[in-house]
Length: 149
Image (tube, rainbow, N blue to C red; front, side, top):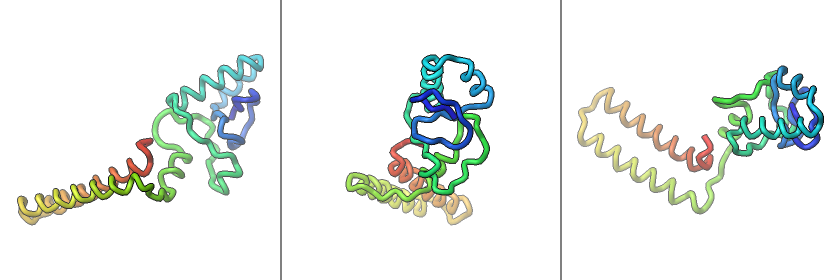
């Protein structure tokens, strides 16, 4: 890990939200730079890693026993443990989200009836309804997660 504020390079979990995960090679390379250049490089790596969007990296205390494993290489694609924690925590709906959820459910209900009325009872019909349910859940997830994933 690298502390973007102090330029410190250290092993283990993030200590603050500004810390940058590093590969062993990146850590060694950064150790050879003077402090100011190291901070600039850490800021560049952080921006690159997050796709120019700040992501909260929990400190060890905030993680509360969630193992982040021994991986030190930054993930450039896919989901990491921090993303998984965010995706699977409970997201209470805000007042402005409730009508959006209701609109999606109502449109899906109407479409499900169209499917039932216009297709023969079959495994394909069942699959169409199941996929529609999945579409509703994914759309609702998009609302709950603010479009982050």
